[in-house]
Length: 428
Image 1: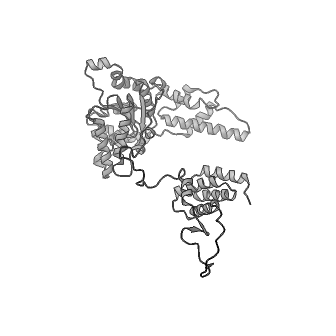
Image 2: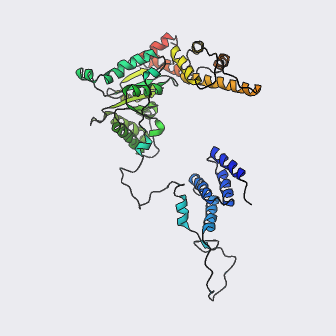
Image 3: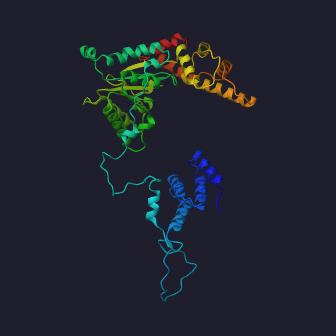
């Protein structure tokens, strides 16, 4: 009996919501076969085998599918004399229920569903073309942002202009004073305070393409692949120059080698250093930015002159920036009577991520209230103030660590800006 279409639709939605649930996919495939929808059943079975290559039930259903699709055998010829067949014996080798299983047909059906697990000798590729597709792995984009889109944070913008942007924008003066474009800028500070957004705005200011990568995009479990990924990343940036190459979580990518017992990780840091130096001069037009919450964990070699030799402290948003963050996260929500300046005063010391969470909590509060009243209502200042009471600043742990660094690990003055901010806030 064919299952009802509504049952199949429900199963499809359930599989879409839980794509890794193998038993659920098998159930859907079985019902699709019963309904005669063999092509979709094969796709579902292929997805099962992609997650569990040895799944016996999926392989059995595929064999049944092959048997059902195979043409009926020709009428048997006149039987030759010989001993009668043993009815208890199973099908002979290469047969399924008395019929040959068409493996080539099954391969054609599954080729687009299951990725190849092993590389054969039939279509060997040279070593230069094998591996990551650079265009897909690292997208060089135009951000469409400038520093004017960054609310508040005037001091950060001024220091960014003086330390990084002014030499880039004035090539003649740079040439006159012999200012090199080598080196990069390291943005550091507490989490959730807009370092990535600022990096994207810098790319917009320079009219350059933007490539952002993190630890997960580069580091690979196979020996030698991480180094290759780093080299390919820089090659993509050089081909797209002028380009801002942004390394997020650089403390994870470029950890102190003295703390690394893992040889592949040490090799990855060494490769990053080689690409930053690039004695051939190929990094012309590649502007290097990096961000970290823990600059004290970055390998000291990465911070030598010619590498990430300039640092910029990105602090929690000031009042103007907090207003901007509230405005951004409330602009597409039904709000009324919101006093942004008042909310900004009440969230001193909150990160941008904390404020985003406050807006989400206030929206949830209004939504639940609307369900209870059976009538939608606007999000108001009382909802946001109640959310501020629930959401506490998340930066305390970071400042505890930063205080110890400023007090006891600031021998060369690298963290003078941080120490000055902590003194201003009376945290030391």
